[in-house]
Image 1: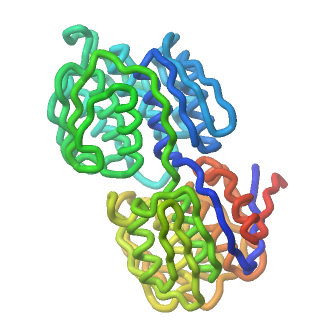
Image 2 (image 1 turned 30 degrees about the vertical axis):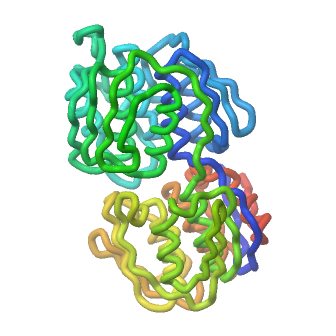
Image 3 (image 1 turned 90 degrees about the vertical axis):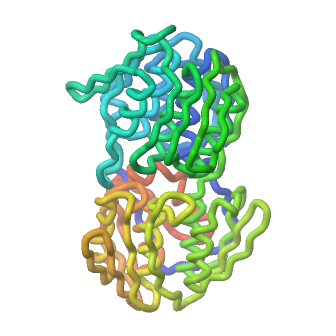
Length: 422
């Protein structure tokens, strides 16, 4: 099992090209099930979750031709409508095949999903939405069986769906299904994340009729069929945020290239409040860090507020910032598993319910630590880079699920991070 060895307290600086967004690429790859024609996708990140998604599409009978960061996909002849546990268990986004399969073929069988153990992410909102569109759903033996065979023309029916809580994958799943439903579907309390918008933009290129992207009310008018399209995946705002935090806490200067700064507003505002200098241009963000950063209070909330996927990275920064800070997690109830690992490195953190109270220390010390989820992995890399001595991070397969060659990118900026299987 691979590990990372992080040598601390090296100066970093330079430019880094931000990869395509995992959280946009996964649903967009899956959306190709909705059409029989070829879809060309560019700026796809090279990640474990992407490989898993391609394998899942292949198992379903979808043709996937990949080269570096691009792929040509055609779902003109599916051979099965079953997403098996062996693939779904490692990645919660696999649930997204349910909507496209049900909408285009009238049937789907999908294993209940797995992924990071960061808390309960129930699929009941997805299921209630499909049932509102007329689908029959049965859950047994760890699988979701769905069918629309009993409906007119075997088509899902447009309706108004109010989601009890904001859910990104729920919004994406129902939006994809609605593109081929009969009539108009309105999603109330929809997710506003840029990745949801990117999926919607790709669907529109494929012939879908969608209004309200980027708002909490998305209206989809069903069409008879979708066609092929070409689309470039948006940048990964969480990867960009991770490098921005690294620059701030290491007192370095890093320019993130290929980004849209307007989609990083919450992160930019917090880093400025901490004392970092930030320069924003059309497609770049430059962060210049300082010593003695100010500790920040953070409350995670759905976009456009502070993202839960940046909580762990900011916690690493708060560990060595001046003052006492509180970080409140409102999205996932089990997303503080990195706290114990940071404390092994000398951090002072107390947890009360869903709030972590961090007292800044002068220094962290290298230690053997274990990654517990995707973003926790990134926080430990950042902590290792600022710490005295050497930090060994185990179970980094979590990191490989969501960051494309993270250690290589940091090494080009001056860090010293080694990957080993010993």
